[in-house]
Image (tube, rainbow, N blue to C red; front, side, top):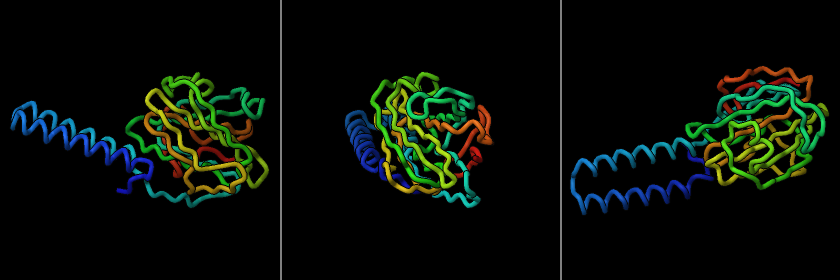
Length: 218
């Protein structure tokens, strides 16, 4: 299993702390039921963190002009028409994917095109599945102009436990499907704002995989 570069230090620090706690408890209390309970709990925490920071190796092969792929693993929580007031200032189709603690949190570029806008905004840390999180939480936004001239917006949104959003994509970059967009550390969400005429292929409550599930065709 490949570990994402954003998680290497956290995993090292966590493992060192857990080893120290268990070693100290063993020296003080010996092989007691409490020691074994803490040992099992530590193994569970270590496994969860490794799972969270895994970096799946995925290649999307059926890429056509106007193809929009899932930018993250998770569950579709929103597919609806909204008024987007940050960049487009018009009506768009919003597709939102919520990532739980059990999903890999690497984010993927959803389409081929040029990044014409990048913006980071500090904010709150409400639960990422709430509708208000799109406008009020800490977030990072990129706007991509596709090769066919259409524009979409991808927004990384921090959640109640997410305290750092990492975005690799910058204004002026040419980006492609199969390229990483960034990473969000602990529970979070990614929004896609698409043209109204986009042919959306997913529905609410559907589970999707980043860089593998087809979200829409424009």
